[in-house]
Image (cartoon, rainbow, N blue to C red; front, side, top):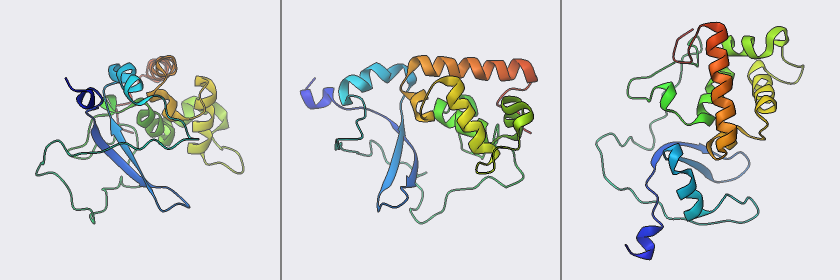
Length: 176
């Protein structure tokens, strides 16, 4: 195997979003959680103080590549975030932990369970933001993205999710 081939990381393109105040896009790629050590060995940990440029190449062309001008499908306002599935989208349990955590924080049932009587948030935070803040505190993380790179944090998240499911009798896959 050549040195260049040894540095290749195969990943699935999963999401993009514009960065506020900057003329750039943030691209998200997914790899299996068990590949964490390999990825960190190849790329090193992210360092916000240094730019590290990488190459991105399409490995295979598919018929499902959407037009760049087509807006992403949106969840109806009345639909619950947790368990909401659009045709062709991945089930909740297959999403990266950071995305699972974000979906849970949007879900009113999870907010009620996590926040208890404090579901009115604070004057400056929505219930979703308040739930995200409380979740980060309970898990000992600075960002939900830490759940994708810190195995201990990911284990604490899985424990929190199991506690939610056990106490409410509701799985994250269930709707409403």
